[in-house]
Length: 181
Image 1 (cartoon, rainbow, N blue to C red):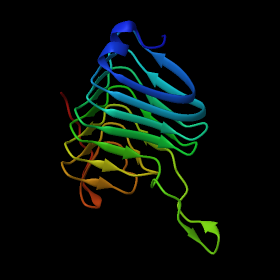
Image 2: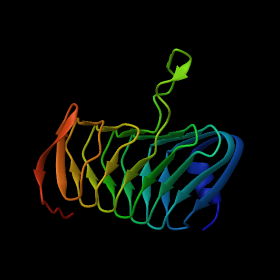
Image 3: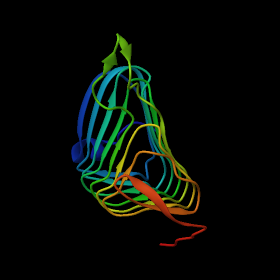
């Protein structure tokens, strides 16, 4: 593992203000991506044979992290955001189609009686997940291994392994499924 290769720097746009621990596999392919980082002690890890196309990765605040493990595919126009010290983890073998939005934060704090109501929360996609086009995954969600998320869905709650979730907000529509590529 190492930082961006010369070719990766040419094919992508980097905006780094602050500290970033960067580990990118030599076999990872990033084309047309934008990386925006602000804050201290942040991390981006991209594993072997992972492909990202025309996606926007945002790591904002201190101690925010994005981990994308081996053999993942993230399609065009996807938006991955880790903010406010939260961690976004995409485990091995996940396939994300186009226009996916994954956000650990609402983007702006909301207060009631001087108490923050909407802190950032971690997001975890377990191994071998398929996420169809135009899906939004919100803070605090965990998707169990081998699950599928249907097109145009919004996940506001976690789903168990080997399930299909669909809708807005998404609900579980099938259990005990398997999928192959």
